[in-house]
Image 1 (spheres, one colour):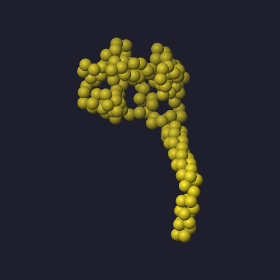
Image 2 (cartoon, rainbow, N blue to C red):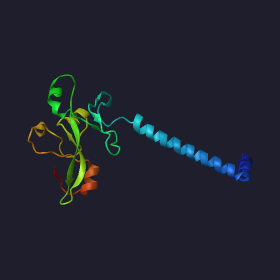
Image 3 (cartoon, helix red, strand yellow):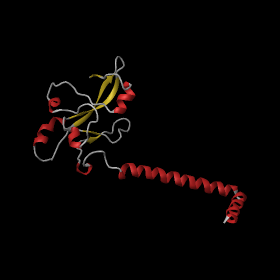
Image 4 (cartoon, rainbow, N blue to C red):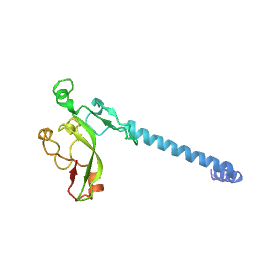
Length: 169
């Protein structure tokens, strides 16, 4: 068996251009296969982190302005939300919409994309808020003070993980 290995090495040394082409082709093929598998795995094999992703329906229009919006939808259902919610057509209804606000800590507000959501948004998705409180029905009242939920990543990256948040519309 060792003789076979030595013979293969000698033959590869005799033709360095062919060896280099073969190694480069194998490297590219393995890299491409790994990249495609990563993409397919992320998109098709891992379900959404919600309770019943196969039962969700998004009503809205795909955001296609400016840079790639990453497949976000802007929903115009929020004004109709109370009627749709109480119509009995759907098992559960939550509403939301993408906006942009100035948000920040202290004197450095920055333009930040935010998603306005109804009080039952997380309950419909079956997502639990790990720290603090979620939205309540009182938060949906007209004139109620704004309630903000921050992702841990946003809180640590933008606010340093310790600074209280202020929102300016």
